[in-house]
Image (tube, rainbow, N blue to C red; front, side, top):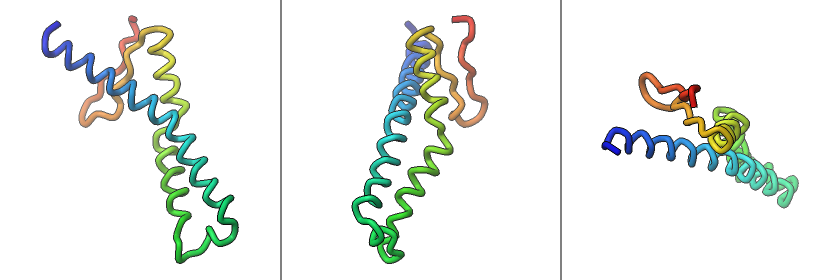
Length: 100
């Protein structure tokens, strides 16, 4: 395997691992921030504490990187061996090879 092929393999692995992390962390972060409000009740909405920003940040990140798309990428790789698309790269991204 030459350096270019190894770099491609490592980039695919990084894409898959970040997609897996996003699937898990979307649920955990939104649940954790919601649990804060459940535990603190009305005092959790205090503008002095400004805790709502954590929930809002978690939801915004989840909206920009929908976990359902990430789950499809991970599943497509696990079931079909399809390489993940590189839609987050700067410049021209590489689409997944549909010939796999």
